[in-house]
Image 1: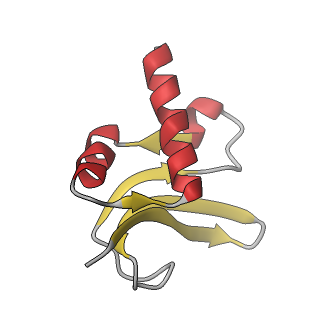
Image 2: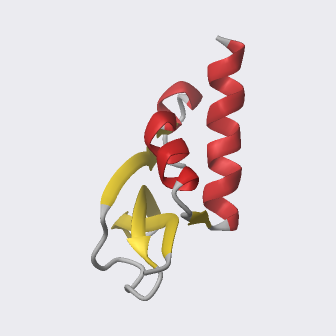
Length: 86
């Protein structure tokens, strides 16, 4: 089973809200997933509340072979930078 870390879209039209999930690569974008590892709300004005990622779980999943999508990789790196800055 090929596992990916990717974004799952939620929210209303023109008000997106994303969950960062670990899912089988064959599953639909908004379909079945294994675990939720974070949230991303691009509409939130407060940048501290915009992105929440459980870095321990993402590191675990990447350690066992999960491949993050390009957007998920960028968000994980952003979360690492903000955590290191604190």
